Length: 208
Length: 229
Figure (cartoon, rainbow over the protein chains, first blue to last red):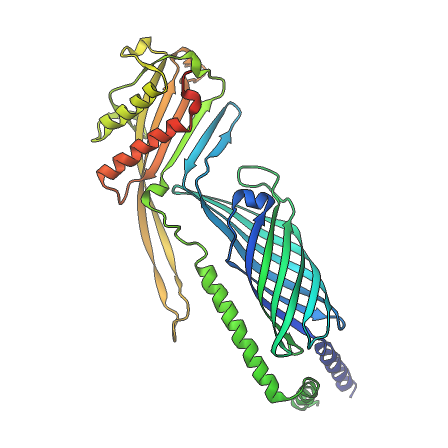
């Protein structure tokens, strides 16, 4: 009999935990490289997405996880200058430069407004970025990848549609991945930063 | 024994009561699933085209590299000697080799040296700098393992692996200063080197010559320090 009560207690605890709102977000990202990232690839990227989930602690505050993928790339013709101990040189040719960014972040968000209404949110994400920097020139490919610690403050708006459980999600996020390892070419100044415009849907649920 | 089925249903019914009508939930869930599928599928399609071909042509794979000895004062030179043949680079060193375009390649290098302000010297021993021109080619063989493709209606097609190869050619132009050649110090006297590398496949002989001549021009264009005042 004792085990029956324990299982019932656990089940009720799980149920009450599930009763807290869970917000699942799926967004398409537009990325704008800035600072040093912009030195390598200047083009705005339209190739990226983010999946995230937020578990509400109360009516307004949530904690969650997010993961995504953004690809910055461009064709470039700028000559590359190289230096050694006793000489210097130049490499020219068509280059395809790309930066693949995979953020895996934990976040805290505060939401303003009620669930049924339009909600504005602000939040801070902290975690790791796996960044693959790639240079294709001629028949040669040079890859450079590092794991970075990073932060991503964000703000946005959630607009309910059709039902209170489905909403349009529009947000903006600034990503900053701190120095880690060396960049292509050996520079230790290897941080990345970019802005994101996130457009997608939010799904409110108690079932996940 | 606990009847887990009854317990599960008890929990289920209570959750349903909390969240409202079961039918409404199913409908909402369907909308959610549909929207998620659209977004994920859309993102997948976008990311599948992550690496567009950028409209690259064969000439986009041409690379020109130049390198100089920083201690060299090119303004101290005035005459140059250029050979009449291009050597072929082999595993054992160099061997003379006359290709169909060699005369035009050598002429282009000579013209660039003249345009840079140097004077041609026919006597190799009397020239301030001696040019050495060499070429090489190599073929790379590779294998692409294939992959399972996206879902097409009712099956996942297999795109089989295939092997491929490409041949690249390189042209090396070296400027050597005979005055600093030192065998004990293993100094060959090289003060500047220009290298052009490109894909030889899918190019006609005429196209290949144009690309090679353009690469030679680029070697000198990206080395403005060679120009005499």
